[in-house]
Amino acid sequence: MALSFVYTEEQLALQTMLRKFVENEIIPVRAHYDESEEFPFPVLQKMQELGLNCLVAPEKYNGVYYDSVTQCIIAEELCRGCTGIALGVLTNCLASEPVVIAGNEEQQDWWFTRACHEGKFQSFCVTEPGAGSNVAGITTTAKKDGDYYVLNGTKCFITNGGVASQFTVLATLDRSMGPAAMAFFIVDSDLEGISIGKKELKMGIKASNTVEVIFDNVRVHKKWLLGHEGTGFKIAMKTFDASRPLVGAIAVGLAQGAYEYARDYARQRIAFGKPIASYQAIQFMLADMLMKIEAARLLVQKSCWLFDNNMPSTQAASLAKCFGADICMEVTTNAVQILGGYGYSREYPVEKMMRDAKILQIFEGTAQIQRMVIAGNLLRE
Ligand SMILES: Cc1cc2nc3c(=O)[nH]c(=O)nc-3n(C[C@H](O)[C@H](O)[C@H](O)COP(=O)(O)OP(=O)(O)OC[C@H]3O[C@@H](n4cnc5c(N)ncnc54)[C@H](O)[C@@H]3O)c2cc1C
Image 1: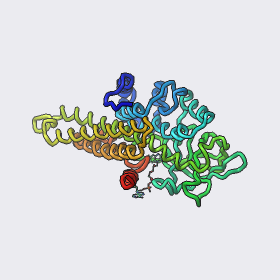
Image 2: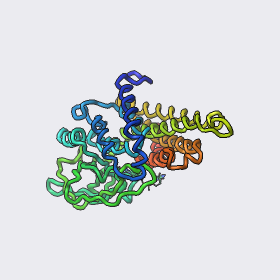
Image 3: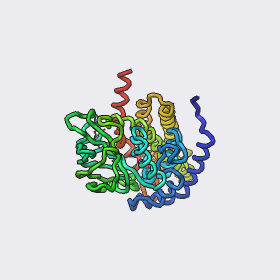
Image 4: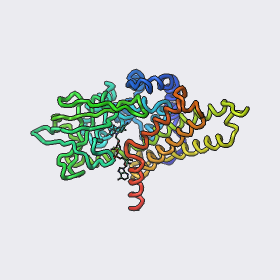
């Protein structure tokens, strides 16, 4: 496919539709969900009606195929409104990716029918209290017992965990063998032995549900093993190739929302008898914001383009995720600065945007882990 900087007509129509949706359905309620920390079921239901519940689902389930570039356009637009709310559906992409990568027909039928036609939420269960950055250090076990695997362990910081009907879960068949003994499973949240632990009280993305998920002798039939025994770690890493550009797009959308708010505010706020936008100090902050957002968007689109064209994209995905998250933190912090005291007040949205931005430097591989991936790749070149 030729390289293009122009969106297709379908992508532009989708973008216009989502911009209206965000203005009408997300922006008016984002402060409420941030304050109340309720899960935004009514807003997410409207997104489901638009076919956005599981963007990575194959066309036969979703009725439409979104390539990675288009998924990122959608993520950007939704997060321009509210990252916390949008994560309700965008997390379904992360959780579903192992099923896209390694699921057989029966597994995909079960998973995506529920995701696309029944409005079910999904969670990706990898992190544990003792293993976050170091995925290879997980200790949740899967012990074979006849036709079943018996899962035992605790997963923490699981997005959507308290509302999800289905999980993808990484476990080890033998703790002494590291990544070589890992396996990914599809797990129905109704199975006996699954319980939800504490709900995290967070700095930002408060509309997003983050909980512990505990597996206590949970019997999972062998037909729900994704791929083969021993492929779990590889599936997790492939999942990140697909999901990290999406986090980059989330960062671009959130930063874009903060930039636009600060720009419009600067035009009308009077200090020393003139709009603050007339002062070069403010203009330069706005110019830097725009420059960095544009650069981050290009990195996201490049990594998506490589992924969509089946080309190696691990390095590009980390560049997009890491740069996007870093500039999002900077842009949202400077948006607060441009609003001055009002930026620090909860009456204005930019303080929430700054709190929401921080998570993007932490989940799906911290800023340090991304740099380790990038450095590892560049030294191998
Ligand atoms: C709101 C939220 C939602 C999340 N959602 C999910 C989810 O849905 N599913 C899921 O599985 N997980 C989820 N996570 C977990 C998230 O992916 C981890 O928190 C993250 O990977 C970091 O792991 P950790 O918290 O254990 O930090 P640690 O791994 O303990 O890292 C602590 C610090 O040390 C640094 N560090 C660690 N190792 C190195 C190293 N080798 N070199 C240099 N620096 C290093 C890190 O960069 C970080 O700054 C979520 C987390 C949060 C907060």
